[in-house]
Image 1 (cartoon, one colour):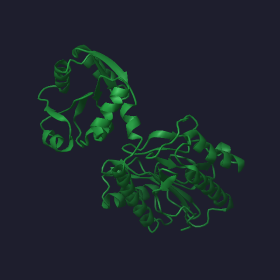
Image 2: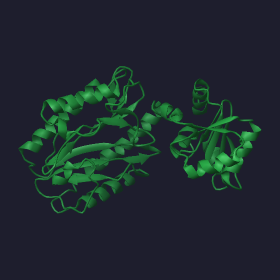
Image 3: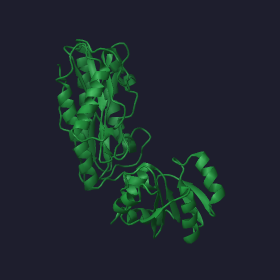
Image 4: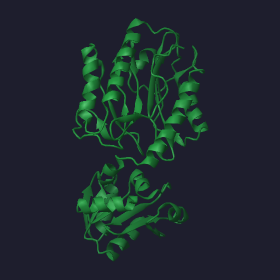
Length: 353
């Protein structure tokens, strides 16, 4: 079944007469279009793609199953024409992506009712097909290659920002189009900051170093964290590393269809709490990845939905002690029919450079 048919079936299920797609991620999912300007109007039996002259040829190639329309004036003039031609009474729009200014504009010009909606395409995006999983796997291989290379580069006196820039370059060299998010390199006491984006701090002997990074490859992301040290980081940090690793392995073992995000999160949280560091683990255990680096399903205390085959999630518990340092370890897992497959291969054991 094509993506267009999947979306139209979902529209029928949810009684959505017509849908305006403006989120670049949802647009790419629905149509395969990789350009930067365009939108789609879908009805339960038709799919229109509107873009300007720069992208009509590209859209004709990529947006299979869509009727491509070139806008010469304002793009919403074409939406108005589609609404009139298709006699659309209610047009649902993505309330998480349409700005108030755009809403103000289209409310006055479109001859139909506007219905704010959320999550229709995102719910479909949660379940990855084989091609999507293969693309994520390739993004992960690029990320792992960069990790293995960076270990040779880190020495006393090298700054965190130099490490981050080198990682980004190594990934691009292997075919990545961009990074998934600003690369995190947090060393020494800064490793106690869960999102310590790289600074000009120099890495020193005895520092624990957390790197959290990933790349975009053909529109899909990877997301990986490893914590290692330059020299001996001291007994407490070594103990913390082992606790985080054990918690992370317990989650890897338990992830399967039917378990909820809440239950999976509790596995890591309860183990870390039992070891006396519950207060030092303040974020969720993981999240979905795909076209975006944070998608559903959430692996957190709020998510009571069971995981299903085809979900791709991160597993990233951590412990952070201000004034000392921190540890986070993260893999990307795909939920399979009877368990999960870890898409990552590089070691998680404590490497002491």
